[in-house]
Image 1 (cartoon, rainbow, N blue to C red):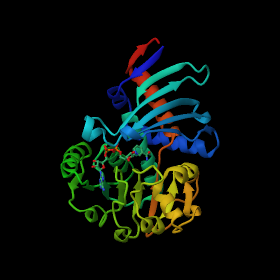
Image 2 (spheres, rainbow, N blue to C red):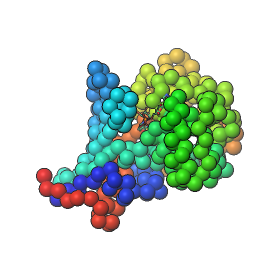
Image 3 (tube, rainbow, N blue to C red):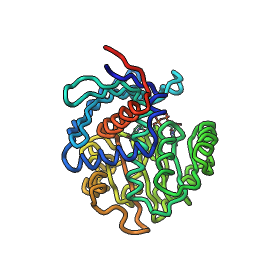
Image 4 (cartoon, rainbow, N blue to C red):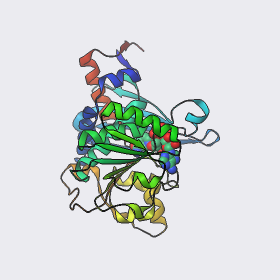
Length: 326
Ligand SMILES: NC(=O)c1ccc[n+]([C@@H]2O[C@H](COP(=O)([O-])OP(=O)(O)OC[C@H]3O[C@@H](n4cnc5c(N)ncnc54)[C@H](O)[C@@H]3O)[C@@H](O)[C@H]2O)c1
């Protein structure tokens, strides 16, 4: 018997605190060498501007096995009334291979992506960080802000999106959900200046702000771009930052934010100071109050499998979901 979990089920089972704990443990296990994490397999579908990613993982220390199939279709919101990201997760019993659960992976992806930024922010942002600047008012931005509120005493957010209506709707929803002030801003600069933490969670393929605007002590979570020819962060931002990534090999294969300045000779690959797992396992995080820190994520299957395993446990405990026979 397998458990079928809809988006509403995943939402009912999982809190951001649960997701952050699961993702932090996954990065710790990866650092300890218990995770099998093949580089994800992409299939591009150019005629529909689509990308499909097949993302399997086994985390030995958590005894968690599964795979996510995630699609990235940037035209979905405008042309089909669908989200950019759609996903499904299969969870298997590592002892037998038997299917344990099929669950919606779209909300899970947003939660685990927010959670990775939450873990990075916990180790890298100043403890007194209160104001968050956000680029992109989409799905990921919502869980990014939830994660910031979970790990820092956040009181205010400033949101820039070229679609002002989306930024307004985001602020109405999130100020109510999180009990913080949220203001939609008309210029990118207003989502950088005066902000302690900056999140880029947009579908932009070109830098969304100017690295000159960054104040010392800022922490940045770069979430959006994950193809070699696209970036949200300019070379100056990368040069000024202590850079931490989710996985070096994945970042060097997929993160245009780093690949473009490397190819231009502006930085070398050793500008990447650490992987998040190394920081979780005790490598230095922020070392000075005026340091600019940057966590660049492209997203790893260990985040999905650890979070999905937690969702499955919580759903079983709470009696959520529908039993199915295949
Ligand atoms: N790092 C990860 O693990 C991870 C996980 C999931 C998604 N992503 C990526 O995150 C990005 C956002 O995903 P989403 O699901 O929130 O998409 P979404 O379509 O819901 O939201 C993206 C928003 O970005 C806005 N935008 C476009 N250009 C902008 C600019 N220059 N400045 C500010 N905002 C701008 C769009 O108007 C849109 O509202 C995508 O690129 C996606 O592939 C990364």
